Length: 201
Length: 210
Image 1: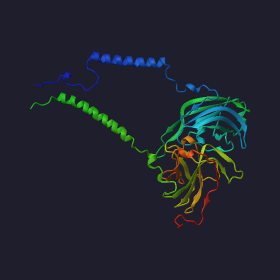
Image 2 (image 1 turned 180 degrees about the vertical axis):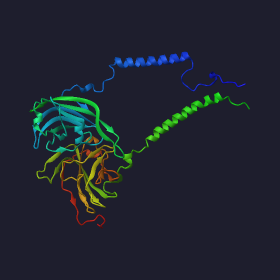
Image 3 (image 1 turned 90 degrees about the horizontal axis):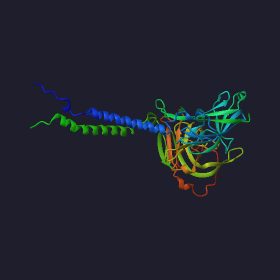
């Protein structure tokens, strides 16, 4: 006669207890811990929404892209040598370990004229200490008082503009395709926006 | 001989298996650290050396002859020479560069600190050697590389010179020269430095006896 092994004879490999009461107790405890954790998070103010800081911030607020920090201070329309420019006075510091090409600043810090929402592109960077010299790269860990200057192709774009809105995005490092190195790109998250009155218009 | 009950032997082996799993997971994580990214596999091919030595790569040689720290730099080649103050300190690296195979038209010039932070050359001075300075084959060009660095970040810097003619640094020839300076060199009076245009020594070969 074949003797079948009873289920209770086979040693359990699972950490989950066999006893239904013990199972119930374990599940109840887990549920209680999860509920307490959720309650704790709620009491402490809950999770911050990703774009909680999209409401326009006042001038002088520091915004951190994760690659560089930028503090917009004021904006003005200036007749420069070759073009009319919208200049934004900023404090800026590269927090990365490599120089940031000035071109990259315009991809993560975007400027629009308000009202109207006309977006200006390709700003150049100059330091207040030598304003006639263009900067091609922002060196690491050197806080600078600087001017970001957006040239206007058509000065009539300025008609009716009272403010500028500087939208600063999070910078993201992505792996390059094939054998190209990692790349910095504009991330989806907005770190903050600053509304600056436009002087001289 | 009584055979060991099967169940007992299985339960005896369970902790051993768990331990083996744990060891394998840890080993996997450790081994992953040795994985080399694709872009590093085809990164520049570096030859290293020190201040005063001729560092030879497949395509050029570089010899650092002089390293100076300065508060101000004046470009004498400029029509109206202006004295430019540093936001930190100017690092001036005097060097001789010789292309050994074919003319070099583009380089990437960097100063790398001990922690890996890199600074690119200052583009403010017409007389400094920059990434677009051309080096003729077999004719040594002597000039100065200029970098602006925060004082508290100057830590055992090396000059990195990479040949980038063929669009990027993929398998490019690169020289890394330890400049032999440190934070201690910042102490004391630094003063100003004057920059002169790079000089190419015609009719002189690096192989010629001195």
